[in-house]
Length: 310
Image (cartoon, rainbow, N blue to C red; front, side, top):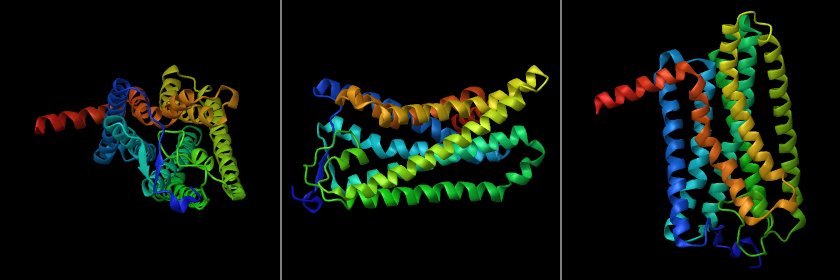
């Protein structure tokens, strides 16, 4: 193929070689995606319907659940379709759309996690200024900034990636469209623009990471000075779920993109990509629900009301 204009579709990496394993992977992905849809859907419904949950912490949690829903709905349905029907193709337009929306939702998740760490910092370290610093207008502006920056990030990366001439075939070594795999098909040195964008993105991610670490250093210093054990437990119970979600998101993503090339293999890359693209959206609702009594009570009330109506 001489360039990208002659490519009508891409070939995605198959999850398995045998028909039995393909059907097994379909069932596993179906179970994980249903768990993610149910968990994140319940969080969104509970926060939207529960008046007592209309606080900054739960507002940002609702936005986080939206990013989780979006990211898993972007990659998993196509992988399930390919496993069920024993195919591996995705159209050129479908690949563009998949990459754009995946970058949009993942790009919004880390700013939202950073904002949530700021919310916990203000709540614990500056409680008297909480309503002033995190009023409804300020929360809306911060959430809008996270989504707008993610949209710009996704648009720039997608436009740059698919503006490159592709002459090394159309087979991607991944079960979804991913920038590094598409760059491998490029025959142009102009992909340096993409690497420049990735470098800027890495700097922004590092800045967010430093902010989160700084916030939690201050939070733990304050919490450890709380005299009552009950007060310390309450403070930790609102912080640990967020810290666990941040750790899961960063550890899986960092291992996927920073692992040494010497240990890289198609099967390992496939497992790692599943870990960072599928597992966090399914696990995040469980992590937040386990230690948050208000959220558990709201979800239980919502489910009880639904069952009574039906």
